[in-house]
Image (cartoon, rainbow, N blue to C red; front, side, top):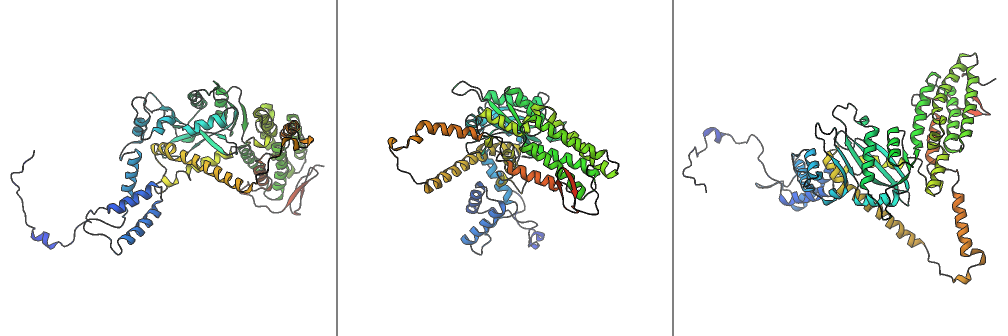
Length: 530
């Protein structure tokens, strides 16, 4: 117990104090508790800050009209109130003020007595490695929520899985690998997130990874997924990636019999860039446009029509022979055109030399994948667009409500929100869309009365119905357009029309007729074979 015996001091105001009628700074007046609770409720619902301020102002005007505050509380928000509100909500989610991100992550996922703010974190963590110098070079974590693991077995086991690597999802120098399967409706379902930070010595965050790292993380994911009721390991039959060879090698190392496809969108991007580089020597205008259209028609055929490697090589050789004839002409313009086209064709040869590599992006590869998966060709994903789209949403839409003035979240906040908010909301939204679709299907579908079996005509016996269904299924597996061919047409249209060449301004129209380049502009010279 503390006892006060005496208090001494100047108990009266001095003359200088009495002369001062205004304080040097504003007094600290706390926010009205009711208004603070109202603001916290809005913030817990991820209300944007600008809307929150407007709602709080409306609330205060209705509750205390014309009153800004009294001697004990304020009824208006100030600029520093947002920081206090954000800290309160972060503390409720398990991230105390002035705590380091690595401390929180280690507290949640450490093997010895972890203290996660939500049991979902422990159930979703398949691998955790803290960055402890000099023991480890980087932080690593593999996350897959129970719903994602269920989707992995349902939609990824013995089926097609997309893989892509991205960065810029949080404020840390971290990279994120996403594995995605497709459900029965063709919608992309993320089944795994593998995040790791760049090494401290790395200058470029986006390039600080190698095959060994991806191979090890994929191996851990496969092992942690365990076995299903049939005592089978998670098996991926078909994998789709972009042009990154490190991802492809890592997939092949963990699934020996996997059939790999290349995203034709990334193939097109590589072709477009190579064609732009090769045609820089050709003057802008009709001449360059005509060359682009001729080579574009070749790329169109290779991407969507040619299903035989020999036929693809033959078509390529014919194109090379044509441009060699152009190059042998005496005119300087002809030599420039032929040399530029042959430069691009030399680059294109890399995609055609090896039959296995050609199969990864050609229509024949989609046919082979359909045979392996026992599905129609139209259901084979020839692009990673679904995964690229999800990458965009995870950087914007899903985390935008939790961002402060547009700043990226910290890595600990990113992990916490991913497991406890983003992915649960993703599956809820998916289920809600399915429910509303089934609802409308029920409303517009009339239930036909069931007919007795004897009333069926002889030609529609159960056996004949099965035969008809099987035959129609076989006929559906044909080398035809896939659902992504709309994208192909758009990409190739941009290619042949010259839209991909940003520095080009078309001076006229040109076309290809009978294998010859014909210019419609009289003041432009375009070489044609003699």
